[in-house]
Every structure is written in C-alpha cells, then in structure tokens.
Length: 100
Image 1 (tube, rainbow, N blue to C red):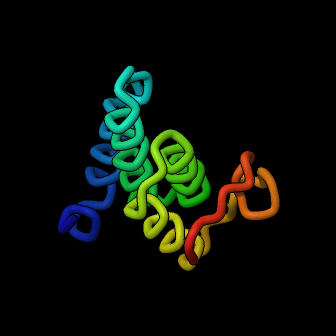
Image 2 (image 1 turned 30 degrees about the vertical axis):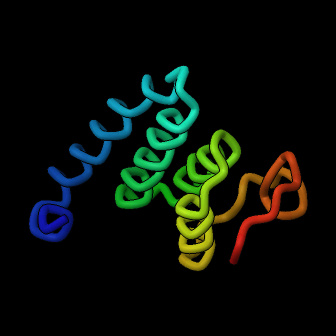
Image 3 (image 1 turned 120 degrees about the horizontal axis):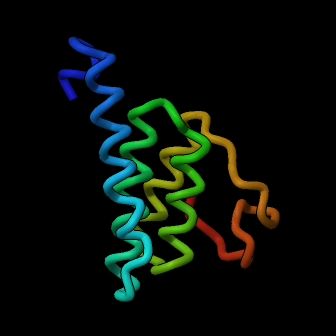
C-alpha cells in the first residue's frame, strides 16, 4: 500500500495486474473460491480507483457465496461512494438484502 502514495504509477500497474490475475479464478468450480477471487479482485479495483466496478465484483462475490465478510465489504464500498449495479432495489438482481 505504500507504493500507492510513493509510486502511484507503479501501484496502478500492480493493482491492474492483480485484477487480471484474479479474473480467471472467478471461473473456479468451488463456489467459495470463486467468491474469494471476486472479493479480492474487488479490493484491487477499489484501490485502483474503480469503485463502481469494485462494488459489482463484491456483489457478485456475495451472490456466489453469501457470507458476512462480503456484506461488510459491500457496506464499506457503498459508504465510500461506490454506486450499485442497479439490479433490484438494493443493488442485487435476486433482491437479497445486505447489511448496511
């Protein structure tokens, strides 16, 4: 995280590489691992300044494998200005509720 402030260009490249590396993992057959990959990619995208995309990944992680750790991350993203994907009234296409 120090690179984010000391070397922002390099930090951006590293977050981009992280997102790219995690993308194939979202196809994992084990649902908890798939959700974990989406969650980690969400965090990389958040730190790269892609907050709306980060929120979509976090919501996908929750839909894939509902867990409170994903709920709290979604709440954090919403609190810090990310806008939902517009699915349903709460940002989920299947109308699941997420703690806020």
